[in-house]
Length: 97
Length: 199
Image (cartoon, rainbow over all chains, first blue to last red; front, top):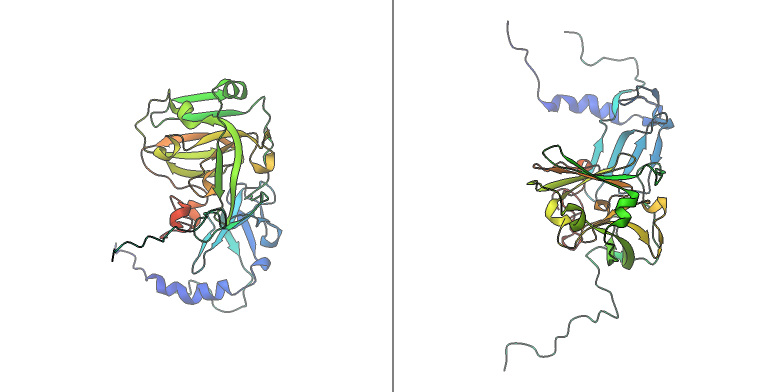
C-alpha cells in the first residue's frame, strides 16, 4: 500500500478565495453544539465586545468569532461544523481523479 | 554645567490623568458582552476553585459574604480603548479564597456562568491584585456588569476580569480562554499595550 500523497496549502488558495468572496449571509451553517442547520444570516451576533461573536439562534453556543486587529484578523469557526455555500455549476473540489 | 536638567518635573497628573498607551478616559461604564446575560440566582450561585489534583473548594453566596470583605478603588482599562479611573468595588480577595487551597499550579482558567473563560497566571491573582467582587459603587453589581459576582483583576485588560465568574480551574499548563484563542494577547498588560497576540 502506498502513502496517500498530499498538496501543500497553497492549493487551497484558489478554492478558498472563491469561497470567501461569496455573500456569507446566503450560506447555511451547522451548529457544532446542537446540530441546528440554518442560514448564517439568522445567527445572533454580539458586537459590543472585543470582537464579533455569532451564536446559534437555537442553543446560543458560539459558532463564529471574528477579531479584527489593526493589521490582522482572526476567524474562529470551531463552533460551526460546516458551511453550505451556494456555488455556480462549475468544477467541484476535489475534482475527478 | 551639570548634566542633569534641574527643571524637569514630568507631566502634571491633574491636567492629564495617567492612562496606558492608546486609551481614552470615560466617565460612564460601557457594557460589553459576548453573549446573552446570565441570570444567576443567589440560592444556587457558587464559586469553585478546582485544583490540578482534582480537589474542589466551594463557596455558596452566604459563605462568600461571610469572608473578610475588601473595598478596592482601582482604575480599569478595556482593550476596546476606554479606561475608567477610581472605580469602587467590594468583594473578597483571591488571597483569602486561595489561602486554604493546596496547589502547585502556575496558571488559572477563570470560567463563568454562560460559558466565558479567560486565563491568567496564578501569581497575578495573588498579592492583593485580584478579587471576586459583588458590589459596585455601593450597590449590588448589576447583571449586565457581571453580577452577582465578577472577577476584578485591574492591572490587566478588563476582559481578564471575567463577568458572572463561577470558578477557577488551576492548571500546571497555560490554557488560553475565550478571547485568547481568538487573537487576543495571552497576558494583556495595558501598560505594555498587549492587546493582540505578538504585541
